[in-house]
Amino acid sequence: MSLSIDLKKLLEYFRIEDSDLEALGQLRGALEANADELVDRFYEHLEKFPETKRLLEDDAVRKRLAESQRQYLLSIADPLIDDDYVEQRSRVGRAHERVGLDTRWYLGAYALYLSLVLPVVYEEVGDDLSNLNKTVTALQKRLLLDAEIAIRQYIERREADLVELNEKLRAEAGSLSEEVEATYKDLRLSQARARQAERLASVATLISGLAHEVGTPMSVIRGHAEALESAVEGERATWRLNMILEQIDRITGIIQALLNMARPQDSMRTAVDLHQTIDTTVSFLTEKLRRRSVEVERELSELPSVVADPEKMQQVLLNLMINAIDAMPDGGKLGVSLEVDGDEAVLRVSDTGAGMTPEQIDHIFDPFYTTKPAGRGNGLGLVVVEGIVGEHSGRIDVSSTVGSGTTFSVRLPLSAAS
Image (cartoon, rainbow, N blue to C red; front, side):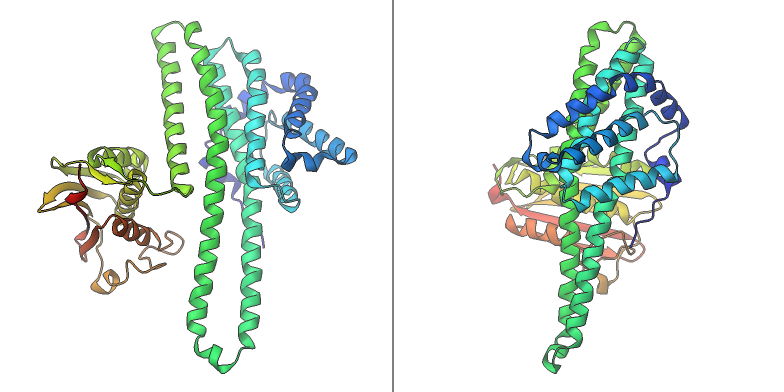
């Protein structure tokens, strides 16, 4: 089993262009001059952690790995990324997966590469702010591309394990008695849920590791960008530097949101301003809304702050809004409203999509049921939403007409308002 990698599409996704490779090419001489020192510092850092130190106990292995790391540092300045390059990076990922190196440590290595190479970049091109910005951006793209290629090998192994597990279950099922045969339908459903849960757990692990490790180089980049503030002159240069800082803050905010979604948290209760929660969620989805040509319409009445778990309220809104956007692939209007109805606060999220049939509405809160095309949804978003609303002593209703769109209404008791 092998994951196919469309190199052209991957380069387009990471927006890696010839100009990026040219920018990195100017680092060749500096990398060659500093390669040995960078490798020594790389392994000096790895030896501080038992999980990575164990891989370096054999001197022969360490020497071989050191040479490999040196070649990799030099390859950052290579002017060509082709199929052979992808296969070489894939082999490295498979090797690390086989020796049991956890993804968090593997992703951490790329963060370490960035922190080691950045000073070389600043020394080499630091006087040219435009070239510095271009080179740092190109370096970040290159390292994230390499991490993506390698991490796919981890995903491939997980998929292979799931296939093997499924085959074992199928073989055992063939030898079961008539009593087991009668319950085979339920068993298949349980297997599907187990596979889906494993994949979700894997994705959560990767998200958490990637978010943590991207956060580290972001902090490094921000620190160096702030250090340049006193050296920058001119309105345009200052504007460019401020733009770098703003984009770093934006990436940091997205990383934090990913962490909040990926890691389990204890439920908490505090005063939640749903107006602010809506603003934050819409801001988080700005790019997705733009790509789908979806316009947001708000009707927000004055509402007391509701005592709730702020992260879970954010998750409710995020799931409902993403579902609404996905229901409008050709664009449309996403409506968000807040109002007081008796002793309840009512939050409504609506779309102008294709709508649902009564039969579909009957199943939308069933686990793993989805109206989205294969591969576009896991059927768990609304299950999570219903569970969170129930935890807050509320309820969720849905109304939909085929051809006219769908509206979800979340009702929370105002007795919990402050």
